[in-house]
Length: 103
Image 1 (cartoon, one colour):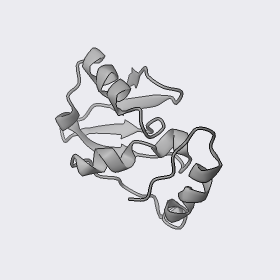
Image 2 (cartoon, helix red, strand yellow):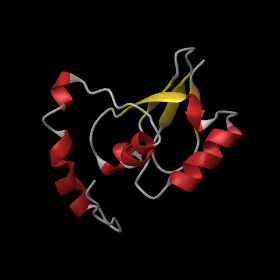
Image 3 (cartoon, rainbow, N blue to C red):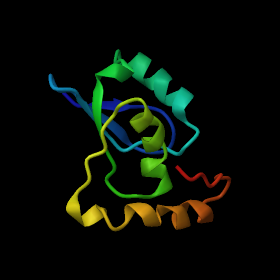
């Protein structure tokens, strides 16, 4: 059963799996405390999330990915996405109220 995590502006979904849950999209960078609250409300622990998939590389869909990867979550990339990941900084720079960060 897919779980919709309710936090932020982006539709974020968690797909449970015995091999580690799959998180689909995140919200903007800086929303990690809200993300943790949504996990807790859904009865999910961060250690249970093995993968995070960004449907596309806009700030409102990939903002938490660097923080989640630092915690051991794997980012699988679709072949068609690999050339776009490093260009996302240009999109971040255009977003209102967003602090550009390089990882």
